[in-house]
Image (cartoon, rainbow, N blue to C red; front, side, top):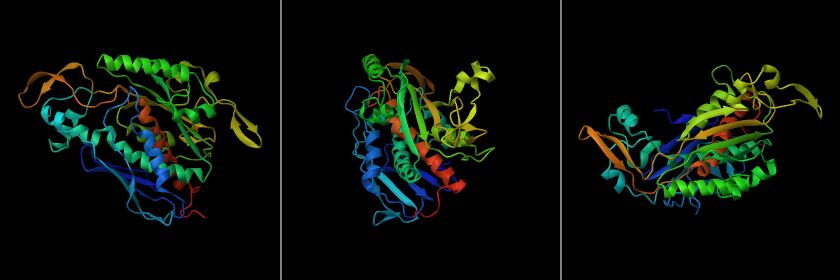
Length: 362
């Protein structure tokens, strides 16, 4: 089982949804980076359920505990271990239905992979709960990147087929204050209504998140197998419920001519740039200095209240399943900070590998 990502800035994830805790170990963070617990907590708070219609009623405090790697307000260069305790777990519904394979979940595949020894409560290792650790690691990575003037933004651009209009960077930065983390407030109101309707019908909705890396220097990426696109894709696909990743214009590129898709090079303020950014800031698997733009498709929450057909592995017969418990009607807004965290982790790793991020911050 692979639970680590990165070569020089390495993140190892641990914990399960209904286990004692979830967390991460970050190894390879430069020494001397000023880092306070409140900075990590601020990112974790973005991942918490809101009071709105989209969210689960499971309420975890998610207070970060830093066990190592930070001394006198600075990173020491040693591994940084961080965790949050699981305090609001309710495994009763999972015990009652443990023999019923939940459609859309990893119940069957995990059963086959681990011979029935996996923790099935709340999805175990396959739950979105483990992304709390991703966000903690991402908070460390974002702090390192900020020292090099690299900024990561993420926002909701679509839910239930309702698309947000293009927004300015200022509005995208402010989207964190909105319930669905959407920069288009008119579209957000329609999204909220759609989520409320889906919840009332015991159903759920998916959507699309856009992640943007600003001031990313040219030259990041290690082709051919550790290209920037490849590593970012692997990181973003590690987020439970992500089923698609695209860069720049993504699949729309397939419908264009070369003359429409090519990003023409020019010089602006003494720096080589491209007049357009159809390729999302990456050429040949290497960053070209333009804004890095990726989008992820998030599937509808598979835990829904409607009755569904399934299979009972204890009785070896078809069965019906009605999932009870506490679930999000739409996980997109909670996944926004997770997507930002994963981009930050990858950029921090490639920054270390390229040499632009030194071993000691001075």
